[in-house]
Image 1: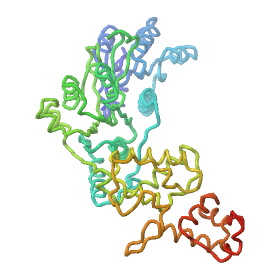
Image 2: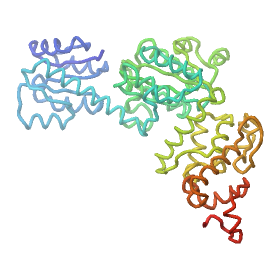
Image 3: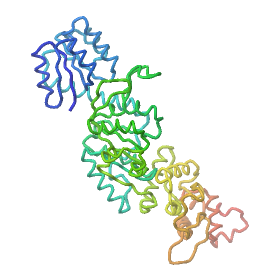
Image 4: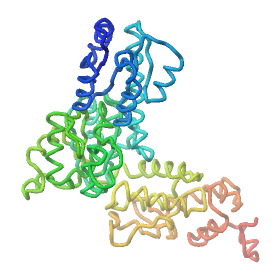
Length: 472
């Protein structure tokens, strides 16, 4: 529930506002200006109703003071006067809205809901400096392997709860993607989703990043800063690489989990934040506990709903469809029109072990999209490091696109390409220029492949004098 502070010297108007909000808020009322200022200095509230008739000449100065100390705090001004200049002055001084008494319960609730929604949006804008990279629908997650199908079923169930989730798995397995999927399929979906990588922020700055700081808390803290937990209030916070947290921060995080409260750096005001935590790590936290590097009580508090994501080599059924999804994403980002992969390129992708998992595959495909001149990604543009992530199927050569067709029970990579080119030529009446267009490659590339694969046609032999048979 949201916490509301009402300052109004009139018992009648206070009673109306309390009745309107008490079902969904914890309401505190103050009728004395000194008590009101003391209360707002000591406690953090989600929203303030400020009656300017109760403070007379001090009204605008008080409003400005509150707003300057916490610019993210919504302040709804109330008054019995509806003078235009008074309303404009209040809004310019930081008020979120202006209500004129007598005001209905419906109008109070509408103003409250709108102010909280705007606050949440401002929190997200303040910290979401780059576009969220999230899969919003569980149906859009590539899950062809039995293990991934079971994981998605579990995450769908977990999404409906408010319990803490711990996602483990190797680097690049999709922990960040799926944390967003959980949030946007949870009851908190309309509230903020905040991601933070605990390993990417210096230790001495991480506390301020998570919990915020007061103005003057340390050198360079020239203004109040809202922390990630406060920004995520009502929503979800994703703590990536939680195993990198210092013991001191772990203690503060444990308090957030147990009491949903904390203080900003340099402050003594207790702030309450109702946040759902999804944590992730590629470390063995139990081993960290045994080595004294991770609090045992914190481990059990975050390990309520554990999920381990498999590496790509454990879910080979997902490799081909995942590659297609990543190709489409890269093409959209780079404004390229590439339809897919050649048989040779896809065979390389499926045969590789991908030690860097999804992240490595995404980077590899993005590079290929940049280098590729044709409508299909070719194997020569897939830069797979030698000695790292060996091919799981040694029968598939790296240069398979240039190999001759092989005999055997299984259809080899080269024979698949041979059949593809042969069909394109037949459909194009053996005119290489038209076949190249159909395959989405250049005539020169097709001519090269025809020579390597040993494809011939009587029509070409009759024109053997020509150095470029693709001209016919």
